[in-house]
Length: 524
Ligand code: KIV
Ligand code: ZN
Image (tube, rainbow, N blue to C red; front, side, top):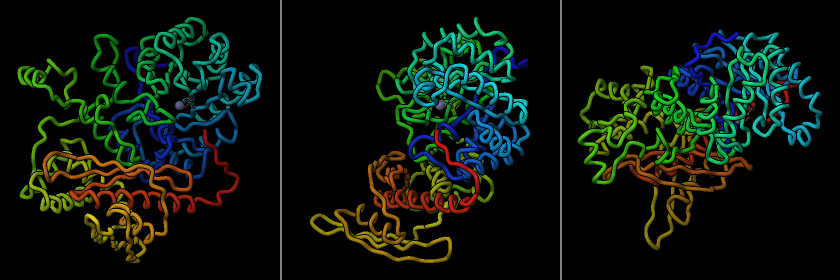
């Protein structure tokens, strides 16, 4: 029996599993721990920490999160295979509250072409998987992959068998982002009418955004009785992504008069968590993104501004403060002290330890010498930079550029490595950006194929900092990095170096776990 309150929607965050599967979004173990602690502070109910059997690195991340993050239920995905379930159980062992999430595809197309299994075989495997998972954890979830394209009567049979076998949560994914809200609500209503025992379990929804309807479909399922939503920060995930956590949570909260439901999420942490995930993955949040985009609370037209001055409710349905965006955009300067800086950092929703705060304050002082006014965006950029590019192993000690119209651009870099080495290199290029990138490649020995280079201004004013995002291909894998500086060539070089560092850290992580015998590498 579930003891969940009927008006409470559980938030199951899968940023670290489905989100991390998005091209270019892979994270190191340290990065995953940072995201997991932000998710704990956000008060999500379940953190899907990874797919323990997928690789030794995934196992280590699930285990580290299970050891260090207390509060939410920690979950690992597993196929209905004994080895997968055992790996999930072993990785989750240290968790005080754990869940094994087993899944098996049910649609005809998956049965025929992917699994080559008959309907009965799928039911048998699902039951075995759930039963086996129940031997390791009392909290077991079953997902019928591609449920929205499965024959409803057959889906009802599979779900009934999984409940009978002991699953406490039944997840109905729209794996391909194919369904539409009315149809999906109809499927949930059908299952609630036709599956014996369904009232004993939590019904869950998991949507992808291929047709841009992941949030709408998730909310339609909630209206039809789903009481768990699986989603990701910023909607990152396979292909077009997953349902966006911040949009689902704020829709439930803002339209409480319609849904009559609540979540436990501390919505003031939504914006900082969104920025953290964007910074770690290098996957930018579009300016016009609902809830956490920069323009989400910006008013440009005179009529709107006038209305806002008279009463903010004329043109705002949510308070920016409620999602962790500060309206004041208070200006700090080079004379601001550590106390004022710490207060601002806290108001922006960041929870920094003493060491992190000191490092960020030192950067703040350096930047304040170069900039007249320091805005919230500058402070966020400092904190984010300290968390990603700042992890090394390479650190930019010096960058010299010479460029001009009609002149060959040249760049010289001095890099310091965590092992104590200092490397100097120089290069020419078609422009200062290319010259600096080539110099960095020579210095580190890592050659990247640049796919995209974007610049945007972090704040306003002539001396605003520029934020550069680079997208590169390295051995067929897409990586993103970003850098911030008042000088955009330097910002570009920092972004490029961040990607190089990310690649070095992944390589170090892989070689540290290489040799773990008998562990297969699986990607969904
Ligand atoms: O999209 C999907 O079907 C999934 C399942 C593994 C839950 O991610
Ligand atoms: Zn998914």
